[in-house]
Image (tube, rainbow, N blue to C red):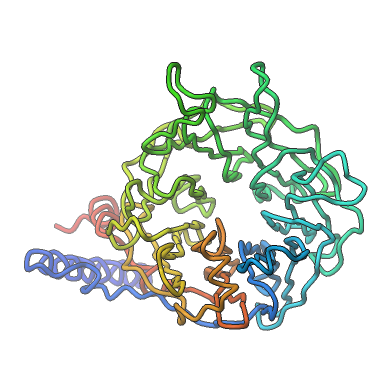
Length: 493
Protein backbone atom coordinates (compact mmCIF):
# COMPACT_ATOMS: atom_id res chain seq x y z
CA UNK A 1 0.00 0.00 0.00
CA UNK A 2 2.80 2.40 0.93
CA UNK A 3 4.54 1.53 -2.34
CA UNK A 4 1.41 2.34 -4.35
CA UNK A 5 0.99 5.67 -2.55
CA UNK A 6 4.64 6.47 -3.22
CA UNK A 7 4.28 5.72 -6.95
CA UNK A 8 1.12 7.82 -7.14
CA UNK A 9 2.86 10.73 -5.42
CA UNK A 10 5.80 10.48 -7.83
CA UNK A 11 3.41 10.62 -10.78
CA UNK A 12 1.68 13.68 -9.31
CA UNK A 13 5.06 15.37 -8.86
CA UNK A 14 5.92 14.57 -12.52
CA UNK A 15 2.63 16.10 -13.68
CA UNK A 16 3.26 19.24 -11.66
CA UNK A 17 6.75 19.45 -13.18
CA UNK A 18 5.21 19.18 -16.66
CA UNK A 19 2.79 21.97 -15.74
CA UNK A 20 5.68 24.19 -14.73
CA UNK A 21 7.62 23.42 -17.93
CA UNK A 22 4.58 24.00 -20.11
CA UNK A 23 3.80 27.26 -18.33
CA UNK A 24 7.36 28.36 -18.95
CA UNK A 25 7.07 27.48 -22.63
CA UNK A 26 3.78 29.39 -22.94
CA UNK A 27 5.35 32.33 -21.08
CA UNK A 28 8.24 32.25 -23.51
CA UNK A 29 5.90 32.24 -26.48
CA UNK A 30 4.10 35.29 -25.11
CA UNK A 31 7.45 37.11 -24.94
CA UNK A 32 8.54 35.97 -28.42
CA UNK A 33 10.83 33.14 -27.31
CA UNK A 34 10.65 30.07 -29.58
CA UNK A 35 9.99 26.57 -28.26
CA UNK A 36 13.30 25.58 -29.84
CA UNK A 37 15.09 27.99 -27.52
CA UNK A 38 13.09 26.94 -24.47
CA UNK A 39 13.44 23.18 -24.97
CA UNK A 40 16.97 23.26 -26.44
CA UNK A 41 16.28 20.67 -29.11
CA UNK A 42 19.44 19.06 -30.43
CA UNK A 43 20.45 17.15 -33.56
CA UNK A 44 23.83 15.45 -33.25
CA UNK A 45 26.05 14.46 -36.20
CA UNK A 46 28.88 11.97 -35.65
CA UNK A 47 30.96 9.19 -37.20
CA UNK A 48 31.68 10.88 -40.52
CA UNK A 49 33.42 8.10 -42.43
CA UNK A 50 34.91 7.79 -45.90
CA UNK A 51 33.24 4.88 -47.73
CA UNK A 52 35.05 5.07 -51.07
CA UNK A 53 37.05 7.40 -53.28
CA UNK A 54 37.90 7.45 -56.95
CA UNK A 55 40.94 8.86 -58.65
CA UNK A 56 39.27 8.63 -62.05
CA UNK A 57 35.58 9.47 -62.09
CA UNK A 58 32.92 11.06 -59.88
CA UNK A 59 30.54 9.00 -57.75
CA UNK A 60 26.80 9.72 -57.95
CA UNK A 61 23.36 8.50 -56.85
CA UNK A 62 24.34 6.49 -53.76
CA UNK A 63 21.74 4.41 -51.94
CA UNK A 64 21.92 2.87 -48.46
CA UNK A 65 20.15 0.12 -46.54
CA UNK A 66 20.66 -1.62 -43.19
CA UNK A 67 19.87 -5.08 -41.87
CA UNK A 68 16.51 -4.71 -40.07
CA UNK A 69 17.89 -6.10 -36.80
CA UNK A 70 21.65 -5.52 -37.04
CA UNK A 71 22.89 -1.89 -37.11
CA UNK A 72 26.43 -3.04 -37.91
CA UNK A 73 25.36 -4.60 -41.23
CA UNK A 74 25.19 -1.81 -43.84
CA UNK A 75 24.93 -2.12 -47.61
CA UNK A 76 25.31 0.72 -50.10
CA UNK A 77 25.40 1.13 -53.86
CA UNK A 78 26.52 3.94 -56.14
CA UNK A 79 26.99 4.97 -59.73
CA UNK A 80 30.49 5.60 -61.11
CA UNK A 81 30.27 8.26 -63.83
CA UNK A 82 32.98 8.74 -66.48
CA UNK A 83 31.59 11.97 -67.94
CA UNK A 84 33.66 13.79 -70.54
CA UNK A 85 34.22 17.52 -70.04
CA UNK A 86 36.45 18.47 -72.98
CA UNK A 87 36.19 18.10 -76.79
CA UNK A 88 39.22 15.80 -76.71
CA UNK A 89 37.66 13.45 -74.19
CA UNK A 90 34.32 13.52 -75.99
CA UNK A 91 36.04 12.04 -79.02
CA UNK A 92 37.69 9.25 -77.03
CA UNK A 93 36.15 5.87 -76.31
CA UNK A 94 35.45 6.37 -72.61
CA UNK A 95 34.14 3.50 -70.49
CA UNK A 96 30.42 3.60 -69.76
CA UNK A 97 28.80 4.19 -66.41
CA UNK A 98 29.14 1.35 -63.92
CA UNK A 99 27.66 0.43 -60.54
CA UNK A 100 29.22 -0.94 -57.38
CA UNK A 101 28.01 -2.08 -53.98
CA UNK A 102 29.77 -1.34 -50.68
CA UNK A 103 29.39 -3.62 -47.66
CA UNK A 104 30.17 -2.85 -44.03
CA UNK A 105 29.83 -5.37 -41.21
CA UNK A 106 31.28 -3.12 -38.49
CA UNK A 107 28.79 -0.28 -38.41
CA UNK A 108 30.36 1.74 -41.22
CA UNK A 109 33.99 1.78 -40.05
CA UNK A 110 35.26 -0.22 -43.04
CA UNK A 111 33.73 -1.05 -46.43
CA UNK A 112 34.25 -3.73 -49.09
CA UNK A 113 33.51 -2.89 -52.74
CA UNK A 114 31.93 -5.15 -55.38
CA UNK A 115 31.60 -4.09 -59.05
CA UNK A 116 28.67 -5.36 -61.12
CA UNK A 117 29.20 -6.37 -64.78
CA UNK A 118 26.68 -3.87 -66.17
CA UNK A 119 28.32 -1.74 -68.86
CA UNK A 120 26.10 1.33 -68.78
CA UNK A 121 24.53 0.92 -65.34
CA UNK A 122 22.23 3.56 -63.82
CA UNK A 123 19.78 3.91 -60.91
CA UNK A 124 21.40 1.49 -58.40
CA UNK A 125 19.32 0.50 -55.33
CA UNK A 126 19.84 -2.07 -52.55
CA UNK A 127 17.80 -3.87 -49.89
CA UNK A 128 18.40 -6.39 -47.08
CA UNK A 129 15.60 -8.72 -46.06
CA UNK A 130 15.00 -9.77 -42.42
CA UNK A 131 16.36 -13.25 -43.20
CA UNK A 132 19.74 -11.73 -44.13
CA UNK A 133 19.61 -11.87 -47.93
CA UNK A 134 20.57 -8.85 -50.05
CA UNK A 135 19.19 -7.56 -53.35
CA UNK A 136 20.67 -5.08 -55.84
CA UNK A 137 18.60 -3.54 -58.64
CA UNK A 138 19.63 -1.26 -61.49
CA UNK A 139 18.94 -0.38 -65.11
CA UNK A 140 21.39 -1.36 -67.85
CA UNK A 141 22.53 -3.98 -70.38
CA UNK A 142 23.78 -7.37 -69.18
CA UNK A 143 25.22 -10.22 -71.26
CA UNK A 144 22.65 -12.97 -71.59
CA UNK A 145 19.75 -10.52 -71.27
CA UNK A 146 20.12 -8.87 -74.66
CA UNK A 147 16.34 -8.83 -75.24
CA UNK A 148 16.05 -6.25 -72.47
CA UNK A 149 18.16 -3.75 -74.40
CA UNK A 150 20.19 -0.99 -72.79
CA UNK A 151 17.55 0.08 -70.23
CA UNK A 152 16.40 -3.27 -68.90
CA UNK A 153 15.65 -3.85 -65.21
CA UNK A 154 18.16 -6.26 -63.64
CA UNK A 155 18.20 -7.72 -60.13
CA UNK A 156 21.15 -9.42 -58.42
CA UNK A 157 20.70 -11.63 -55.35
CA UNK A 158 23.08 -12.36 -52.47
CA UNK A 159 22.40 -15.18 -49.99
CA UNK A 160 24.86 -13.79 -47.45
CA UNK A 161 23.85 -10.16 -47.12
CA UNK A 162 26.05 -8.69 -49.85
CA UNK A 163 29.30 -10.54 -49.18
CA UNK A 164 28.95 -12.54 -52.40
CA UNK A 165 26.56 -12.03 -55.30
CA UNK A 166 24.97 -14.51 -57.69
CA UNK A 167 26.80 -14.56 -61.01
CA UNK A 168 23.68 -14.29 -63.16
CA UNK A 169 21.05 -11.61 -62.51
CA UNK A 170 17.32 -11.77 -63.14
CA UNK A 171 15.92 -9.72 -66.01
CA UNK A 172 12.55 -8.07 -65.41
CA UNK A 173 11.96 -6.55 -68.82
CA UNK A 174 12.92 -3.64 -71.05
CA UNK A 175 12.32 0.12 -70.98
CA UNK A 176 12.61 0.79 -67.24
CA UNK A 177 13.57 3.89 -65.27
CA UNK A 178 14.30 4.61 -61.59
CA UNK A 179 13.58 1.22 -59.97
CA UNK A 180 13.36 1.15 -56.16
CA UNK A 181 13.16 -1.71 -53.65
CA UNK A 182 11.25 -2.15 -50.39
CA UNK A 183 11.25 -5.08 -47.96
CA UNK A 184 8.22 -6.37 -46.07
CA UNK A 185 8.90 -6.12 -42.31
CA UNK A 186 5.28 -6.62 -41.25
CA UNK A 187 5.43 -10.29 -40.24
CA UNK A 188 8.00 -13.07 -39.64
CA UNK A 189 5.98 -15.15 -42.07
CA UNK A 190 7.00 -12.68 -44.83
CA UNK A 191 10.66 -12.37 -43.86
CA UNK A 192 11.80 -12.90 -47.46
CA UNK A 193 9.22 -10.72 -49.17
CA UNK A 194 10.17 -7.61 -51.10
CA UNK A 195 8.88 -5.48 -53.96
CA UNK A 196 10.53 -3.67 -56.85
CA UNK A 197 8.78 -0.56 -58.21
CA UNK A 198 9.70 1.09 -61.49
CA UNK A 199 8.53 3.16 -64.42
CA UNK A 200 8.14 0.96 -67.48
CA UNK A 201 7.28 2.37 -70.89
CA UNK A 202 4.82 0.30 -72.91
CA UNK A 203 3.28 0.80 -76.31
CA UNK A 204 -0.12 2.53 -75.95
CA UNK A 205 -3.09 2.16 -78.31
CA UNK A 206 -1.93 5.32 -80.05
CA UNK A 207 1.35 3.61 -80.93
CA UNK A 208 3.35 5.95 -78.72
CA UNK A 209 5.08 4.92 -75.51
CA UNK A 210 3.11 5.24 -72.29
CA UNK A 211 4.82 5.21 -68.88
CA UNK A 212 3.25 2.72 -66.47
CA UNK A 213 3.54 1.89 -62.79
CA UNK A 214 5.42 -1.43 -62.69
CA UNK A 215 5.48 -3.58 -59.53
CA UNK A 216 6.95 -7.05 -59.05
CA UNK A 217 6.95 -9.12 -55.85
CA UNK A 218 9.48 -11.64 -54.59
CA UNK A 219 8.64 -14.13 -51.84
CA UNK A 220 12.12 -15.67 -51.64
CA UNK A 221 14.43 -12.70 -50.95
CA UNK A 222 14.99 -11.81 -54.60
CA UNK A 223 15.83 -15.23 -56.05
CA UNK A 224 12.66 -15.13 -58.18
CA UNK A 225 9.82 -12.69 -58.80
CA UNK A 226 6.12 -13.28 -59.39
CA UNK A 227 4.46 -12.05 -62.56
CA UNK A 228 4.56 -8.25 -62.36
CA UNK A 229 1.55 -5.97 -62.55
CA UNK A 230 1.40 -2.73 -64.54
CA UNK A 231 -0.95 0.15 -63.81
CA UNK A 232 -1.81 3.06 -66.11
CA UNK A 233 -3.47 5.57 -63.77
CA UNK A 234 -4.38 8.09 -66.49
CA UNK A 235 -3.27 9.52 -69.83
CA UNK A 236 -0.59 11.77 -68.29
CA UNK A 237 3.18 11.54 -67.97
CA UNK A 238 3.40 9.52 -64.72
CA UNK A 239 6.52 8.69 -62.71
CA UNK A 240 6.43 6.00 -59.96
CA UNK A 241 8.78 6.81 -57.09
CA UNK A 242 8.64 4.94 -53.75
CA UNK A 243 6.84 1.93 -52.25
CA UNK A 244 6.29 1.33 -48.52
CA UNK A 245 4.85 -1.64 -46.61
CA UNK A 246 2.54 -0.95 -43.65
CA UNK A 247 2.30 -2.94 -40.41
CA UNK A 248 -0.37 -5.30 -41.78
CA UNK A 249 1.46 -5.94 -45.06
CA UNK A 250 -0.49 -3.38 -47.11
CA UNK A 251 1.58 -1.86 -49.92
CA UNK A 252 1.43 1.86 -50.73
CA UNK A 253 3.21 3.30 -53.77
CA UNK A 254 3.64 6.93 -54.76
CA UNK A 255 3.83 8.51 -58.18
CA UNK A 256 3.63 12.00 -59.64
CA UNK A 257 2.24 13.28 -62.92
CA UNK A 258 4.21 16.04 -64.59
CA UNK A 259 2.23 17.01 -67.66
CA UNK A 260 0.35 15.92 -70.75
CA UNK A 261 1.95 12.89 -72.32
CA UNK A 262 0.61 13.36 -75.85
CA UNK A 263 -0.07 17.09 -75.70
CA UNK A 264 -3.26 19.05 -75.14
CA UNK A 265 -5.76 19.13 -77.97
CA UNK A 266 -4.89 22.05 -80.20
CA UNK A 267 -1.55 22.72 -78.51
CA UNK A 268 1.75 22.69 -80.34
CA UNK A 269 4.09 21.12 -77.75
CA UNK A 270 3.99 17.33 -77.57
CA UNK A 271 4.76 17.37 -73.83
CA UNK A 272 2.98 20.28 -72.21
CA UNK A 273 4.20 20.49 -68.61
CA UNK A 274 2.02 21.39 -65.65
CA UNK A 275 2.91 24.38 -63.51
CA UNK A 276 3.20 21.99 -60.56
CA UNK A 277 3.53 18.25 -60.20
CA UNK A 278 0.60 16.39 -58.68
CA UNK A 279 1.41 13.60 -56.24
CA UNK A 280 -0.69 10.45 -55.74
CA UNK A 281 -0.58 7.13 -53.91
CA UNK A 282 -2.03 3.72 -54.76
CA UNK A 283 -2.82 1.25 -51.95
CA UNK A 284 -2.98 -2.55 -52.01
CA UNK A 285 -4.48 -4.62 -49.20
CA UNK A 286 -3.78 -7.97 -50.88
CA UNK A 287 0.03 -8.01 -51.06
CA UNK A 288 0.34 -6.14 -54.33
CA UNK A 289 -2.15 -8.23 -56.30
CA UNK A 290 -4.37 -5.20 -57.05
CA UNK A 291 -4.52 -1.54 -56.07
CA UNK A 292 -6.99 1.15 -55.12
CA UNK A 293 -7.98 4.09 -57.24
CA UNK A 294 -5.41 6.92 -57.19
CA UNK A 295 -5.50 8.87 -53.90
CA UNK A 296 -4.49 12.53 -54.16
CA UNK A 297 -1.60 13.73 -51.94
CA UNK A 298 -0.81 17.31 -52.98
CA UNK A 299 0.05 19.60 -55.86
CA UNK A 300 2.76 21.45 -53.95
CA UNK A 301 5.80 20.02 -55.76
CA UNK A 302 7.95 21.88 -58.31
CA UNK A 303 8.96 22.83 -61.00
CA UNK A 304 11.53 24.17 -61.10
CA UNK A 305 13.43 22.01 -61.80
CA UNK A 306 11.56 20.20 -64.54
CA UNK A 307 11.85 16.82 -62.82
CA UNK A 308 12.66 16.17 -59.18
CA UNK A 309 12.07 12.99 -57.19
CA UNK A 310 9.88 13.02 -54.09
CA UNK A 311 10.00 10.75 -51.02
CA UNK A 312 7.38 8.60 -49.30
CA UNK A 313 7.80 6.87 -45.93
CA UNK A 314 5.60 5.31 -43.25
CA UNK A 315 5.64 5.05 -39.47
CA UNK A 316 5.48 1.37 -38.49
CA UNK A 317 6.91 2.01 -35.01
CA UNK A 318 3.44 2.19 -33.46
CA UNK A 319 3.80 5.74 -32.19
CA UNK A 320 1.82 7.18 -35.11
CA UNK A 321 0.44 3.90 -36.48
CA UNK A 322 0.95 3.57 -40.24
CA UNK A 323 1.07 7.33 -40.71
CA UNK A 324 2.28 8.15 -44.24
CA UNK A 325 4.62 11.05 -44.94
CA UNK A 326 5.19 12.60 -48.35
CA UNK A 327 7.98 15.11 -48.95
CA UNK A 328 9.04 17.07 -52.02
CA UNK A 329 10.64 20.30 -53.21
CA UNK A 330 7.98 22.99 -53.20
CA UNK A 331 7.15 24.52 -56.58
CA UNK A 332 8.56 27.88 -57.68
CA UNK A 333 11.90 27.26 -56.00
CA UNK A 334 10.59 26.74 -52.48
CA UNK A 335 11.86 24.65 -49.55
CA UNK A 336 11.36 20.97 -48.80
CA UNK A 337 7.76 20.50 -47.63
CA UNK A 338 6.06 17.54 -45.93
CA UNK A 339 2.45 16.47 -45.47
CA UNK A 340 1.03 13.37 -43.81
CA UNK A 341 -1.94 11.01 -43.87
CA UNK A 342 -3.45 9.36 -40.79
CA UNK A 343 -5.84 7.14 -42.80
CA UNK A 344 -3.49 5.27 -45.16
CA UNK A 345 -3.63 7.84 -47.93
CA UNK A 346 -7.32 8.73 -48.03
CA UNK A 347 -6.81 12.30 -46.79
CA UNK A 348 -3.71 14.43 -46.25
CA UNK A 349 -2.64 17.41 -44.16
CA UNK A 350 -1.44 20.66 -45.68
CA UNK A 351 2.29 20.66 -46.52
CA UNK A 352 4.61 22.41 -44.05
CA UNK A 353 8.30 23.35 -44.53
CA UNK A 354 10.81 20.89 -43.11
CA UNK A 355 13.68 23.38 -43.10
CA UNK A 356 14.25 27.06 -43.69
CA UNK A 357 11.21 28.45 -45.50
CA UNK A 358 13.18 30.10 -48.29
CA UNK A 359 12.55 30.37 -52.03
CA UNK A 360 15.52 30.19 -54.39
CA UNK A 361 15.09 29.04 -57.99
CA UNK A 362 18.89 28.71 -58.36
CA UNK A 363 19.13 26.00 -55.70
CA UNK A 364 18.27 22.42 -56.61
CA UNK A 365 17.08 20.27 -53.67
CA UNK A 366 16.62 16.49 -53.45
CA UNK A 367 14.99 14.91 -50.43
CA UNK A 368 14.98 11.67 -48.43
CA UNK A 369 12.60 10.63 -45.64
CA UNK A 370 12.47 7.82 -43.08
CA UNK A 371 11.04 7.08 -39.61
CA UNK A 372 13.02 5.54 -36.74
CA UNK A 373 11.88 3.00 -34.15
CA UNK A 374 10.67 5.78 -31.82
CA UNK A 375 8.38 7.32 -34.43
CA UNK A 376 10.70 10.28 -35.12
CA UNK A 377 10.41 11.43 -38.73
CA UNK A 378 13.79 12.25 -40.27
CA UNK A 379 14.01 14.48 -43.33
CA UNK A 380 17.33 15.00 -45.14
CA UNK A 381 18.06 16.92 -48.29
CA UNK A 382 20.96 17.95 -50.50
CA UNK A 383 21.18 21.46 -51.90
CA UNK A 384 23.25 22.22 -54.98
CA UNK A 385 23.53 25.38 -57.00
CA UNK A 386 23.25 24.63 -60.71
CA UNK A 387 24.50 28.14 -61.54
CA UNK A 388 27.56 28.01 -59.26
CA UNK A 389 31.01 28.63 -60.75
CA UNK A 390 32.82 26.07 -58.62
CA UNK A 391 30.08 23.63 -57.74
CA UNK A 392 28.84 23.70 -54.14
CA UNK A 393 26.48 21.35 -52.34
CA UNK A 394 25.41 20.79 -48.76
CA UNK A 395 23.49 18.07 -46.91
CA UNK A 396 20.94 19.10 -44.26
CA UNK A 397 18.84 17.20 -41.71
CA UNK A 398 15.71 18.00 -39.74
CA UNK A 399 13.27 15.92 -37.70
CA UNK A 400 9.68 16.01 -36.55
CA UNK A 401 8.77 14.76 -33.09
CA UNK A 402 5.02 15.34 -33.45
CA UNK A 403 4.10 13.33 -36.54
CA UNK A 404 4.95 15.88 -39.21
CA UNK A 405 3.15 18.88 -37.71
CA UNK A 406 6.37 20.80 -37.02
CA UNK A 407 10.13 20.36 -37.47
CA UNK A 408 13.29 21.04 -35.50
CA UNK A 409 15.72 23.67 -36.82
CA UNK A 410 17.76 22.19 -39.67
CA UNK A 411 21.31 20.96 -39.05
CA UNK A 412 24.05 20.85 -41.69
CA UNK A 413 25.67 17.42 -41.98
CA UNK A 414 28.40 18.08 -44.53
CA UNK A 415 31.60 19.78 -43.43
CA UNK A 416 33.02 20.70 -46.83
CA UNK A 417 30.91 22.45 -49.45
CA UNK A 418 33.17 23.39 -52.36
CA UNK A 419 36.32 21.77 -53.67
CA UNK A 420 35.54 20.36 -57.12
CA UNK A 421 37.88 19.19 -59.84
CA UNK A 422 37.17 19.75 -63.54
CA UNK A 423 35.54 16.33 -63.81
CA UNK A 424 33.37 17.05 -60.80
CA UNK A 425 32.22 20.32 -62.31
CA UNK A 426 31.22 18.48 -65.48
CA UNK A 427 29.15 15.82 -63.74
CA UNK A 428 27.52 18.29 -61.38
CA UNK A 429 26.40 20.49 -64.23
CA UNK A 430 24.11 17.61 -65.07
CA UNK A 431 23.42 16.56 -61.45
CA UNK A 432 23.89 19.59 -59.16
CA UNK A 433 23.04 17.37 -56.18
CA UNK A 434 25.18 14.36 -57.12
CA UNK A 435 22.25 12.53 -58.71
CA UNK A 436 18.51 12.24 -58.25
CA UNK A 437 18.76 10.67 -54.78
CA UNK A 438 21.17 9.79 -51.96
CA UNK A 439 21.40 7.28 -49.11
CA UNK A 440 19.23 7.76 -46.02
CA UNK A 441 18.15 5.05 -43.56
CA UNK A 442 16.73 4.64 -40.06
CA UNK A 443 18.93 2.35 -37.99
CA UNK A 444 17.65 -0.45 -35.72
CA UNK A 445 19.12 1.40 -32.71
CA UNK A 446 17.14 4.58 -33.43
CA UNK A 447 19.88 6.62 -35.12
CA UNK A 448 19.68 7.86 -38.70
CA UNK A 449 22.45 7.34 -41.25
CA UNK A 450 23.12 9.33 -44.42
CA UNK A 451 25.30 8.51 -47.42
CA UNK A 452 26.32 11.12 -49.97
CA UNK A 453 28.87 11.87 -52.70
CA UNK A 454 31.23 14.81 -52.32
CA UNK A 455 33.01 16.61 -55.17
CA UNK A 456 36.56 16.88 -53.85
CA UNK A 457 39.44 18.02 -56.04
CA UNK A 458 41.14 15.10 -57.84
CA UNK A 459 39.46 12.58 -55.53
CA UNK A 460 35.68 12.16 -55.81
CA UNK A 461 34.50 10.63 -52.56
CA UNK A 462 31.57 8.81 -50.95
CA UNK A 463 30.87 9.65 -47.30
CA UNK A 464 28.54 8.49 -44.53
CA UNK A 465 27.59 9.88 -41.12
CA UNK A 466 25.31 9.10 -38.20
CA UNK A 467 22.61 11.55 -37.11
CA UNK A 468 20.87 11.34 -33.74
CA UNK A 469 17.98 13.32 -32.37
CA UNK A 470 19.09 13.69 -28.74
CA UNK A 471 17.34 11.33 -26.33
CA UNK A 472 16.16 14.15 -24.11
CA UNK A 473 14.53 15.75 -27.16
CA UNK A 474 12.98 12.67 -28.76
CA UNK A 475 11.62 11.59 -25.39
CA UNK A 476 9.96 14.89 -24.45
CA UNK A 477 6.21 14.92 -23.82
CA UNK A 478 4.51 17.43 -26.08
CA UNK A 479 2.08 20.00 -24.79
CA UNK A 480 -0.93 18.13 -26.20
CA UNK A 481 0.21 14.88 -24.60
CA UNK A 482 0.69 16.65 -21.27
CA UNK A 483 -2.81 18.12 -21.34
CA UNK A 484 -4.23 14.67 -22.11
CA UNK A 485 -2.26 13.25 -19.17
CA UNK A 486 -3.74 15.80 -16.78
CA UNK A 487 -7.30 15.36 -18.03
CA UNK A 488 -7.45 11.56 -18.24
CA UNK A 489 -5.04 10.11 -15.71
CA UNK A 490 -4.49 12.64 -12.92
CA UNK A 491 -7.17 15.33 -12.74
CA UNK A 492 -5.68 17.60 -10.09
CA UNK A 493 -8.31 19.24 -7.87
